[in-house]
Image (cartoon, rainbow, N blue to C red; front, top):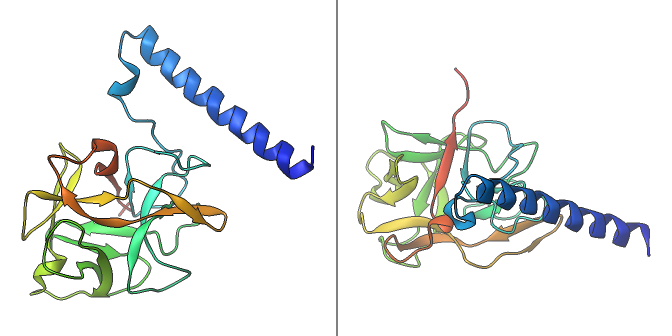
Length: 193
């Protein structure tokens, strides 16, 4: 077995053992294993917006909002949260109701078309009157909803794909009522003042 294959096999065993321990703990507490998401081991510095469930992220880094490709891009997707931060660092401005890049000043997440299921997001200049940049965050439900249509949620795509040493997924709007919670529940980690 090559050194790389041995490392990957060891990593898979370690992840499986960690998940097995998590499920065993839930069962000992009398809770169903599906009641709670498997949280990521978030290493990205704040501010950051990330999915509460690690899903299938291979290194348990979690899923963050990110610019496509390296560095600045005007298109967004969900991506493995990067330990050093950078283009995966976003903050939620509750007063302005915007998701803003912490890395690219003056840039905000924006719908690329009017709010509808399947509409994707871009990273555009922040503008006070841009309706496509308005997002409300429901802390109890952990959902971002576009201001133009409260029946839709910001969701990570159901399928993941390789992105170099990381992983990526689509990022779009989908009906809140019919979308699995693990794809639409976001946590916000704010930077300390």
